[in-house]
Amino acid sequence: MHKTLQAVLLAVIAGQNASALSAPPDSFRDLAEKHADAVVTITVSRSSLRVLGAKVVEALDPLPLRNLIPDYVSLAFGLVSTVVYPLNRKTLGSGFIISEDGLIATNCHVVENPGRITVEVRSDRKRHPARVLGTDPRTDLALIQFEESGRYPFLKLGDSDELRQGDWLVAFGAPLGFKGSMTAGTVSAKGRRIGLIEIEDFIQTDAAVNFGNSGGPVLNVRGEVVGIVTAGLPLVQGLGFAIPINELKNSLAALRQGKEPVWGWLGVKIRDAERSGAEVTKVYGGSPAAAAGVEPGDVFLKWNETEICEAQDLFRSVLASSPDSIAGAVVRRGGRELKLSISVGRRKEPTRIF
Image 1 (tube, rainbow, N blue to C red):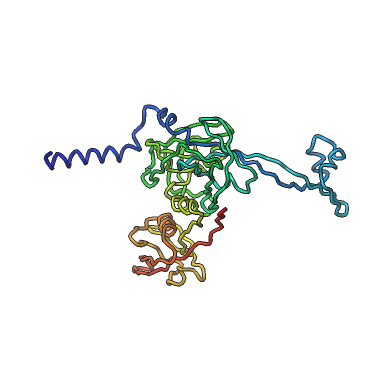
Image 2: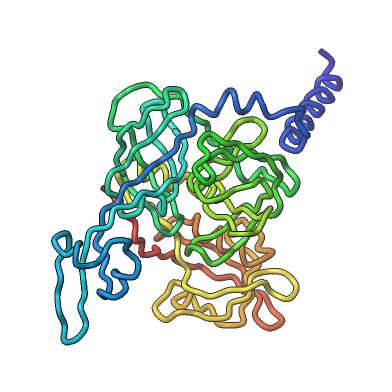
């Protein structure tokens, strides 16, 4: 084939691939038929102790308190009677299988403080016992696994960095207990922070999500997981938030190996600079930033090879940096630019490995 013609064809193919995520599909039914069996509904049964004043229990419970005393332990403190009684409750969430041997990704808050975990698969409608392998509360990620051995359908992970505003997405889960549901929408925005967890870089979508969608996958039109639903806003339509899958890949790999996810740490508070960059508003004592001579008012312009246009760029770059590695940074201080070498620290993780 003539080299010029070959180059033209390759360029056309590349253009088609680049626009594949944003091309409006005729239907999402192929996505549903091919991938829904890898989405699961997670039920968590928890037993806990509830402590209430006697008058509160008497008012809330349909039975007279005197008939319930044998079921409770009563303790008297002066004139206030306190009862301690068992409380059994169930919560519902979603997840998706990521490997043939039955590893399941979901939200940490879905399986937090678990009692008994069961997982329902659409193909057989049975509830299968599962166990927690590990959680990463900073990113709201959990990894669980079927206790029964077997071969399971699974979803492939995509590249969330490819997403652009306006690209099509579909979300799977069990909203309000309606298992096996799928909704469609677009990428409304990227890089959202809503103050829910410590590490946030959410994808905002108008695909409908509700209670029960938490932990479910968000897929692009190629059927690849690009996010995990983590939050919706009650009584508000068209505002759902998902964790980008690229943000979770390192954590998933670590949890699969029974290790603790590792995140880079700089030790500053930042905000978007007036023109471009990430402006430092506070430097924490004893932090890598303090050791490197970073000062409040400095504006980060570059972190290694990454241009810093806004605060989120620096946030993501530091997180992805290996602790104890040396990062080359460029900051603007006053009217001049300075080059700094920064020894990246390690964020203290509340990760739980089981």
